[in-house]
Length: 316
Image 1: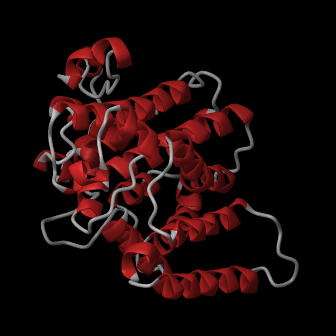
Image 2: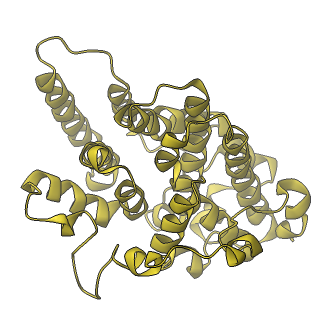
């Protein structure tokens, strides 16, 4: 089985949230109650940020609601940023969501290009005095991916992730006022891991629409065709493809954590996405890299609490 070699290839997964050290180290009083406030009562639309008072503008609320619906993990991570940086982070991630959903919301490439042009003009208008060269413009690189073609190799997927997910983290670091080379290196690896995991998680969704974006070089290495994924084939070769791709994401997380002692603690909130990434990688290991297993599409109800604990422990 693909998972049988996981220990030697990945080493032990370092979720650490339920380790013995955590059991011996009791969280401060009220932590659990405060963490539960992320979602509020069942059916409630309140959040930690939204519940802070009536001073939130309609535009802030729109960004928060958009994230809550389209990027729940990013929404939770943004809530744990310092209060003075939270609004900017919501706006930045909402912009990323608006761009990311273009491809799935249009049926013709021409319409998608028109929407991309709209966002280009929007950015130009914001900085009409003298537009600076900012990483946010790199988000518009996604225009090149409107052709619905699979990645030729894992490096192409990593480059795409660097130009999108990593750029988002670079901007988040700027929002936090952090300019540090080690933090940038960590952000690069975390962004690449995020891009790879996103590609894996979206495979069932895209497959239902007869699209496959997994790197072709890895598929060819194991003799797997796109049709195998469209038919939801679960044989060993298909799972080996998923294993190889997931292993690359895990490797990037390990590299990011190798900078842990050199990254400013103030940067850690920007990297809390690693909790969700590692949660997914652990779950896909448990189902022996069956990308179509129903459990992989289920929302982790303990994620808000896990994020809060990791934030309290000042880890990423």
